Length: 243
Image 1 (cartoon, rainbow, N blue to C red):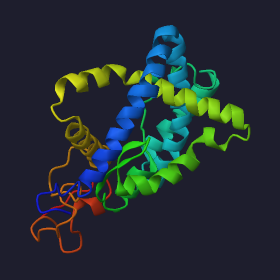
Image 2: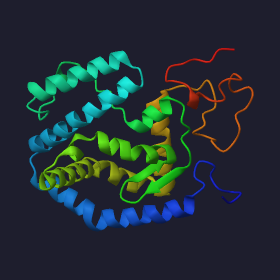
Image 3: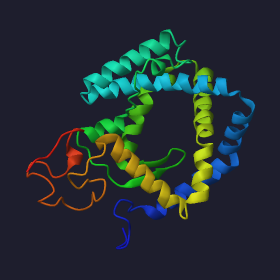
C-alpha cells in the first residue's frame, strides 16, 4: 500500500482495473440487453419479475434476520414471504407491502458485520462489482442461500439467473445515467457510496464511536470505546456505548 493510498482502499490500482473491465463489459453487453428488456417488456411484467425475485430474496433475509437476533423483523419477514407466496401468486404481486409489512433486507455480509467481523479493505470483484473483504467472504454463503441456485433444472436455473441480472440492471439504468452526469470520478463516487451504504445497513445512523469501516488499518483510539470493545464494528446493531 502506497503512503498516499486511501486507507479503506489499499488495492486501488487493482480495483480500478477490475472496475474498468466491468464497465467495458457492461457497456458492450449487459447495458444494451437491459435497455432492450426495458423497452420491449411492459412495466407491469417488469414489476412482476422484480416482485418475484424480491420474494425469493426475502427468504434469505428471513434467515439472516434470525441470525442477527431480530425477532420483530424476522416475524414480519416471515409474514411477507407467506402472504406474497400464497395470495401474491409466488411473489408476482407484492401484497405484503400493500398490507404495510415492511421489507427487511439482510445478507450474510451484514450478519458477519453484526457479529463483529471487520469490513476489511474495499475490493472490486469481476462481474459482481463493489464489495469488501468481508462481503466477498460472505458471497458463497449468500449464493447458497439463493433458492434459485438450488434448482436441479439447469436450463431453468440459468434462465432465472440471467433474467434476474437483466432485470436488476434495467432497474439501475436511471441511476447509472445520473451517476455518469454527476460524478467527476465515477470509481471514487461508487466506492464511497457503497461503503457508506453498507455501514448504514449494519449500524444505521450511529456516530457515537469511530467505525472500523473508516480506518480498519489503525488501532482503535482508547477514547473511542471501552477496553473490552475497540470499535462498534464488534457490536450488534443498536447497542449503545456509555461513558
